Image 1 (cartoon, rainbow, N blue to C red):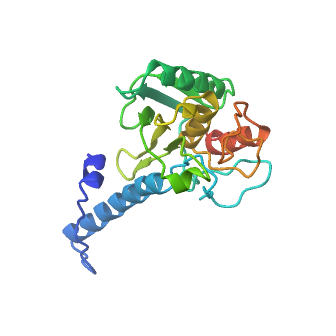
Image 2 (image 1 turned 30 degrees about the vertical axis):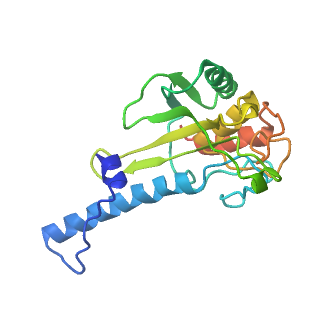
Length: 227
């Protein structure tokens, strides 16, 4: 229901200074819809593309903690995620994401389970896309993938907060189908932002890193320690 409202761009009119039951109800609905719309908007405006021109969108964090995506900060999320693959994902891509899942599960901080979650549960969709970079852009970087969290938050009766995230590889380029890219994009889906540390799996330019640094782990703990 909430997703349909957002994707359909349906907005309720604001009734200013209306203290009637109808006015208060509309005001409450507007508040809830705007919260959801803002969080999903943040997902698509900060997708965590691996390239040299990417800039972290998160707030400043200490050097011993990988930054956290802005729309995840301050949210209480379960550490359990249900993941599934889009129908167009090849076995080669699945193999990379499967290994990435094992890397994050070994931390013991998050638990990624294959299957379909409910609307109220955390979900990750693994997918692929094809994007051709312009010749001028190829001189600086190639977009290998994108990923990010989408926070779905319902307040009031039946309140819940869930992350319906994506992690995707740009299969237009064969060198995107590798474990380091899958680990990077899954990190974004879980809420990690870009890091300035070249050793981090969240460094914006692919360095072939597949081992999470202490800062990467601390970033995950900052999100899921409350779980």
